[in-house]
Length: 116
Image (cartoon, rainbow, N blue to C red; front, side, top):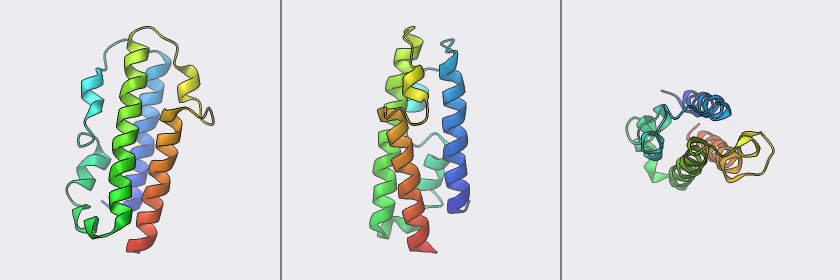
């Protein structure tokens, strides 16, 4: 997978989660998204992307990816408890979920620039 594919994988995963959160039916469990190595981006980071670990930008991506999964897990728990999380998933809301996603994309783009 190339870094652009990793970025796309994150965006697609976030979109799938956002769609689920709009009508949470408790079919998705927090433990399923808490681990940062279970999604396509995580698999790439801890596998094929590992050679980039020599760069600080890689460490930044890891940190932001963990932050995103933590924020996503928190929002999912709230949604599964019946709480409205609409503001947390709307782009531009400034929620930790949205900000973590933005920062992760920024970190991925910085890594892309360094390794290109």
